[in-house]
Length: 447
Ligand code: ADP
Image 1 (cartoon, rainbow, N blue to C red):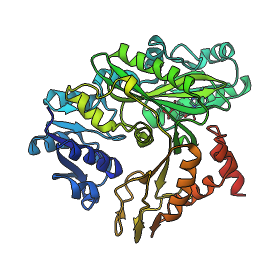
Image 2 (cartoon, protein in one colour; image 1 turned 90 degrees about the horizontal axis):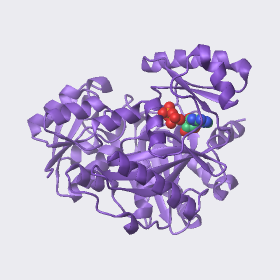
Image 3 (cartoon, protein in one colour; image 1 turned 30 degrees about the vertical axis):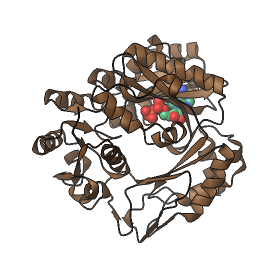
Image 4 (cartoon, rainbow, N blue to C red; image 1 turned 30 degrees about the horizontal axis):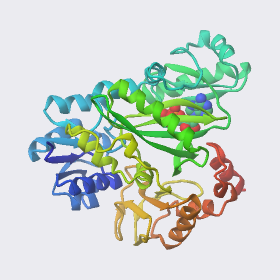
């Protein structure tokens, strides 16, 4: 049994995990940098430990300080949230070596999915459909041969990739040499590893991902999909569940493929299998071995608390649900509220002078922000998430329109006006968009 959880994160996700711990009667330890001493997750935790100065590498990424904080407070488990150390296999191993439970998958599974080529090969072996592409790494000297086999356009991607970096499209043979060279240079600069691989470039896909949870002993369920096609620079902006593009049969079919794969893998914890979806086909791109930012929309349509499930399986308690118990009800949309200029997306840290969160039926606001809160400039700009649920997509959109009118955040710039714009757009109303839609829309409306 787990009796005290140290939350190795900050911001809205630290608060999210803390809430689940409270509901389960588990004591909480917050850790924070000196820049976050006043943060909400610190105020609400049973205990807190300062783990270093503002830069993440000295605090939220400092494994020694976090392990020391566990020992000082007697925490017997760590929840890593997302980002920071959540997909760091070494961190999971060090915790296990100290007899501290890592609330997540095994270090081995984190490692397999953290390397894109191994992840893709593993997915294929587990029966998950993948994007046609190279068999592992591609060297400049055999790039042309591989590209001809796949067929142009092709995408060159960094093996160690993340955050959309080290990715280049080659539309024809003439582009190829330069695309490979640029991708390798970028990959080396960003990840210290210049290995690249090649995939068929899909021109108008949607981004659809499947939420799964496994108990580590061969049981796993899927909780349907999320459509995260509305992105800017590969960063998700608006997510919905279910996807406007899938019907029940397609959902249950791809969901079952993923759940079966996770059973075979004996996967433990929550995870997300990400696909590009085009012309009725799914193509695996990667698996995230952690809780995702957009998990609340899945919770809204299933009623299942994913953090409760993570904690249950980490403590050996198994899953609380069987596949046949999971019922998808209604529609949910999440808007990511960033402290950024809604047109230029330049970060806008500063003090929130006025904060009023909306309420009412079907509304959830996950945020560590409050009136008088000073947003530090050191971390990502996500300050909150607005999640709206309705019985139908139309009802959900109507509710979202009302809720956006109610939300007030003054003193800084936020992305709220962007959502006011999207909610009045006909393509969005029709659910008719792909992964390029938002950037095209932003370019068209900025002229
Ligand atoms: P990262 O880990 O860097 O985020 P992903 O493999 O998850 O990389 O891809 C990020 C995004 O890049 C996808 O959401 C999609 O927008 C685009 N992308 C990736 N692979 C392809 C592909 N084969 N064809 C078209 N777009 C792609």
